[in-house]
Image (tube, rainbow, N blue to C red):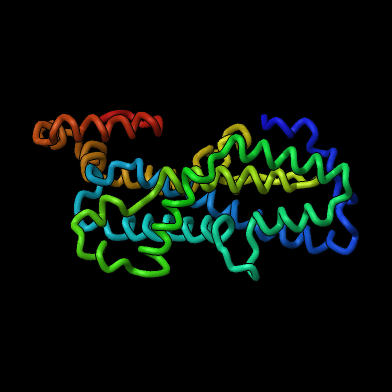
Length: 257
């Protein structure tokens, strides 16, 4: 629990100057939706990154590679947009914070400053901002000519660790700005804290899709559909590859092959 969560309701919407209240709600909602989108995309990307496509789709895996590229690029753009954009006319977390400081009554302003100081003490923004800025500049908004000539470009493709740090920071700031408003930083579909009803499938949509890849793999189909033939073919499947297949089957509650 964050240090300020015990006083989550001590700052009320009524503590905001009346002329700014409606604008606050709309701006906060917009930033919150950006954060939800980023965290949900990171959840999906993490499942794709951790899936052994080299075992299940070793060649021509264009769809999932392009999907991952799109998710990461979108997340980088969003994190940059809400945390790093320097255009004074744009909406960022920092600008909404400044607006609130200018429109909160004295007691609430001091309490809000304490919250934000705690957030910054817990999240080192310098640990992600430089890499996010560099990636956005060299790969998304522009193409870096020198990097385009480098054989190392693919190795530095995703600043994934920094992206997660940026998303965690943005999530905490949005929550700190939520006055009398309960906000979740991720779609319920991907929130590990949310459990569906008894007897319902607990997997998310991306997990179901990846599980289907496992079940449709030729080894599983052969073992299920033609077990006698599979006994002979099984010897030709490398042991390490078979181990991975069976691990994923066990996770689904399926019998090994």
